Length: 171
Image (cartoon, rainbow, N blue to C red; front, top):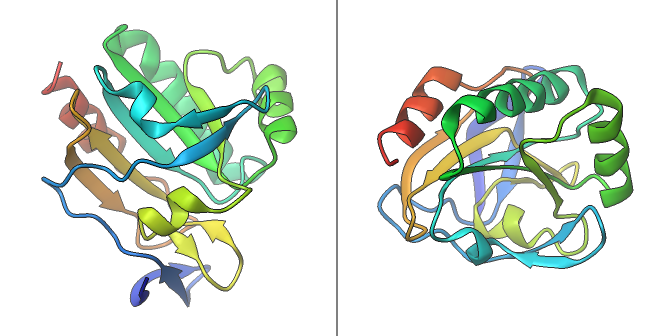
């Protein structure tokens, strides 16, 4: 595992990412995450579908909430062949509560709170805060990374158009 510096900032301050960021063209690392019902889910479970994987620092922040709601809305137009995953280190209870309160039902929220396995495997764990950086990965049906965006400022939203176009091109 390595530390990655000078890639992202949080409110203008540089932060350190822990782990290794996989390259486009590589198979996405398989990680175990916690579903909102506390069951364990492997990322490989979603193979066979195009997958938009987003990582968030916390669902209870304005930008993460806006991003998750936007991707939930877009999910209606992408069809059943695309699965959107919103992953943070928030507790599954908080994710379930938030989705219920906001009416978010077309994407899947998963938690990396236990071991930050996804954060480390994807190189998106903010070391100073044990939060995930804002990123979007688009995986094809075989789990190969076809698009990657690491948002340089954690408080900025991702480029929705590029991520959605990348997913649509794989359907």
